[in-house]
Length: 145
Image (cartoon, rainbow, N blue to C red; front, side):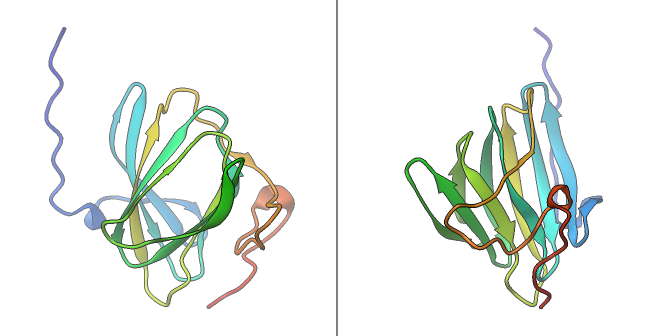
């Protein structure tokens, strides 16, 4: 089996980002078959609207700023503050949304495991009022900061 090269990034907040939706950009820092690691830059009042993945874990690590992760699943619901250094493992089937409630841009690292079979299923919350709406629901951000 061949050895893969070492991947190094000096500052993950300074990589090349691609727009995913208004105010939310993604930069892939590593992808190898079943796993993808990426960084998201999220503007104030923006984020990733509510959705779930049917087979994929989202593994979040806070990098810079503050984000809120709202989630709903079979084992409860809540809001988790994703601060620098914080970690959240979002299992398949759990509804979730990532939102920047501050006046400053924020960054998070995400690992999709596995990335093979990745899906993004827009879904309604049952217990939370969403901070963002997905274009799949015909919506735009609910509030601007």
